[in-house]
Length: 226
Image 1 (cartoon, helix red, strand yellow):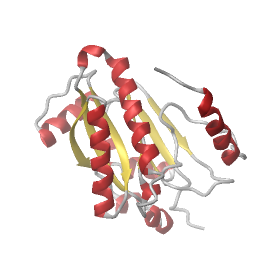
Image 2 (cartoon, rainbow, N blue to C red; image 1 turned 120 degrees about the horizontal axis):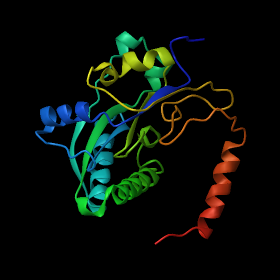
Image 3 (cartoon, helix red, strand yellow; image 1 turned 180 degrees about the vertical axis):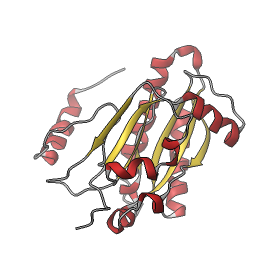
């Protein structure tokens, strides 16, 4: 019914180092080491108090995992140019971009990736299930890695490049670009359900999504790692 409200679309790219280096210098007066920083796009509650609560909790988890938050950046977006539809606008979260550096660079990039993963999962598990937050379902970490980054939303393919201003910057260069457009047939569209996911896209139907989630939860008791 609304041609300008998409089921979800986005793009995964490699880290555009020249672009992020310039942004970090201009925004935070920091020089980035190519393999020892991460940038992530994060959906947050629109309520300011709830948003601050989420950011503070995430900061504490990062500290526990030897990750230093350089700063938060309001992600530049252009709703008017992208012509975002009313349903997508109504469901839209507040979007910020976080810059993180590795406090233990001698451990290597793979260990850095592991700690970023732990910080993302721990924060998401706590905040998205927090009954004290009215907008808990708006919190979502699109990606958190030193290798790739995801820009996505409840958009159409044509809207992605117009909505996210970063993507049209001449210094935004990458060896990789994976684009995905979602066609929703059995789950209602939302900003967090948009793809690509953090490592892949998929075109398969997930008709038993709740069943799959429950099967994975049932297996958690058999899984462990040091």
